[in-house]
Image (cartoon, rainbow, N blue to C red):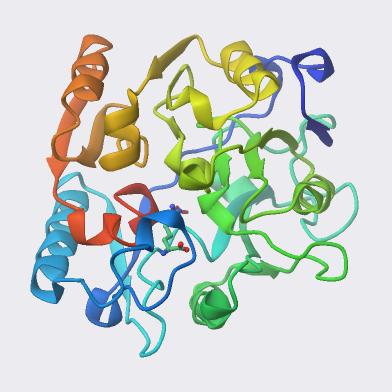
Length: 323
Ligand code: ARG
């Protein structure tokens, strides 16, 4: 099924109609050896150039790595690269995906086989792994992408590129989030990704994309204002979205938890991750958000990511979940 949905009236399906998609079981991290704030490409970085405590940053990153291992997730660490201080935000350089083994992800009409009945029944033999590489918005970050492409190639992924003539920028899973368990993508545009990226992705992968426009430069990536916790539940920061975007979120999630401004803006509460549908890894001190998460049955695991918040990122964007 291919389509871009920008308002609730355009929803022609409900989630159970879509092919099932297995959860990713692996995490890709980038060693923080070269992490720093060296330039300003989002409002959070403004007062922090040269102001990162490298020892603290390493300890914060190590604590997250160990947590994924404790949760039984297979962790792979890529080395950082000198001169690429933002490479540690490994959510941004790519969008990994699964495509049905009998469809070609790169060809028109290939990919997810929802309409033909083939494809997504939870049997991983039926899938092949592919990845859409990002086109970074900031010139300072463009050289990060080939390092990731090389890694995905080395583990057998099919590499997909957007047509750069049609799309100026697309920042991977900073802006594009899979709906857990379903072959459907949430895709944001406005600051770091273009709407046209999703026109290309829906055609390449054969999945519908729910396109959300972002309004507030402090919430410049979708992963700063929408955290998908499980198939039914999302954590959001409402003022980052348009009325149409909020209506779509409410149309597709049964439970929508709202983070208050202080948690979302100062502590990146919504840049949390729920890798197994139950544990939520989140910046320390998001007390109001944590209370709401616990009320809905989630187990909160707090981390310090203060050095990374100086750069405009926290738990979610410091990792890539992949298959
Ligand atoms: N300094 C990085 C940038 O502005 C931070 C990226 C954080 N990533 C994210 N998905 N929120 O590009």
